[in-house]
Length: 131
Image (tube, rainbow, N blue to C red):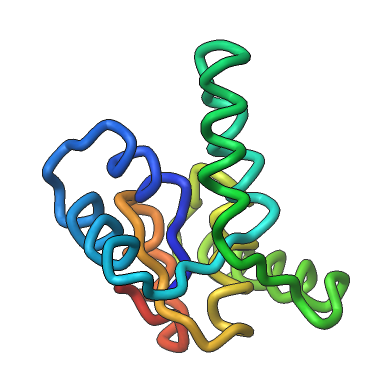
């Protein structure tokens, strides 16, 4: 499973949302939660201070990282996915969401999220599995 930054934020805030509870359960059961570099950046940049940044870094560094086999091809797939959404009248708020979706598709992993854009992206791209 890949957890989007929105799921990590739900987890860190202990919101009780479905994404928070699913991520907490996966971490407690030591199930692999794959980390993408873009998600790593998004979570870290939300730190309120240096101490929190360092604590987040330690936590996120424990997650196994996943990298695309051909980053340029994955970027092309993300751009095409963004364009397909736009052509269908849907504009994702962040191009990074399409990159994250393209990575989840390539990795063959479900994507855990708390971001409505992924529901919209999945309506355009049925290969995107949502957790």
